[in-house]
Image (cartoon, rainbow, N blue to C red; front, side, top):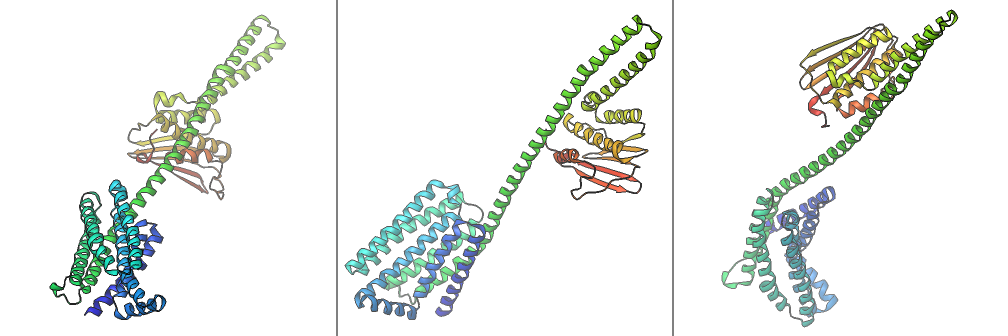
Length: 456
């Protein structure tokens, strides 16, 4: 039975050396580095509990150091290995229970105590070996190291219950069982009146129980780590997306300001100059009524009138006041009528669904998209008719622009006939843009989810 438990303990330690190594390499979680080191030294200790291994190693040391020194060295090393794996396990526990985040002062102080004990007992080991007194080292181990570690264990247990996450429960149960079994093994080894036969088996059993419970806690801990990583990745992605949206908003807002400035300059500058020229021509017609000049003056006046109309149209297209005054639907309907009047291409407008009430920025983006698509129809499609359709069923708005022209050729990057400006506005609104070229013309569809539009 003892050999079965010993073999099981060895198997568990080998398994968790591999597991902790893989988890450390995959997650880069510092705690599993210390758990791997703990398992390495623990398996050395468990192997030393085999008489064949223990006395074989002792014989090797005796050949190197001599009989007395060899025996003393192995006895001291046996207890020092326990100090090492208990120290690594304690450090691992602090990290595993997230004390470096939730109990920083206790974490730093406890780490300092653990390191101090490890260095102190290394000094004791050297001193006791020099004094050729392994019993002194054993006494220091039992009456100094063990009590201090028990105090740290109790304090850590209390802190973990209040400060650690949900993964603590299985882990703390396993640690408590391991400590109880280790104390039973220690008591059975050094208190003869207990008449304990093979007390080391309690240590093996505790080790197996701790490993089983730890594996349950480990599964939950890995889930928490992955959840945290996913949360961080989501936050970073969201932040980057917000930066891109802010950048796009700045660019589009700058573009609108520049359009408005140009519209004002056209309206107040060139249009004013043309009006002044027209006034002067009217004066010449009144004061210089020569028959040969009448036709020239009349034609020049007609050209100026036409130029004034075109400038007003350009100014309006650059900065459509109808969006602010009447809303998106009225502005689009008015735009379609003007296109038909100016270019002679019938552009029908249809609206269905609920009333649209959006911010001026979003309404401007939708207006500009329709404007760009209709301009492309005028310039490139050779169409006889066109249609602009808007459907709103909250939170979805669908805008469709179609024509009966020659269609277009899709390029590799999908831009077709110069739709880069539209793509920027589509990305800003987190919308979907569908382009379709058929034998009967072109279809452009914009699907907008109002819940996905960033705040402006």
